[in-house]
Image (cartoon, rainbow, N blue to C red; front, side, top):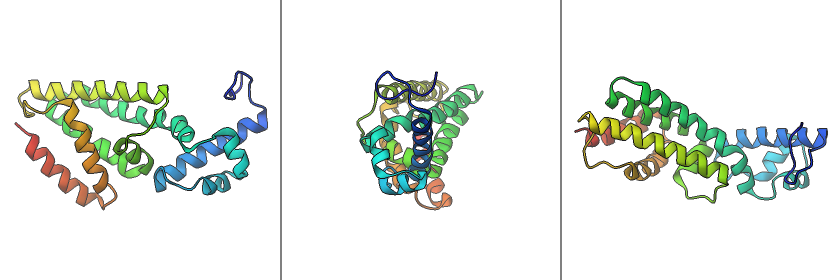
Length: 187
């Protein structure tokens, strides 16, 4: 069975191709320019009209909802690696470094992690899962005595938000600031 429209009928082959082209163009545009990338540019890049874009994705949030769960899945992969790291501190610092590398490469992900957005149920579930992974990474580092005992999983969001502003700088700049944060968090 082919891709589904917002109702229950499968999309026609040409409509499915247009939707796929729009998703690919939006992924590129959001990755390069953030979530405020012009929708007209996305339609042009996909080779479709703005009317076709709105027929598939009536709002910018609809694009974000279609793309964000896959982007957050990359964060879950980082968390899995961090939890497999024998040294909990290295797992924690590797997770944060990897997260910020992803954000630096994908301005849309950076925007999504730094903003409060209305999210689809799929994106909410992806974020919930990501938060649970991060909480386990933090707990492991605290239990090992390497992370400050008073650092809580809820403290991660302000750190990510602060770093999201620095991510647009050259890597040596944001890595320097990450090192400052980590020095302050080490037990």
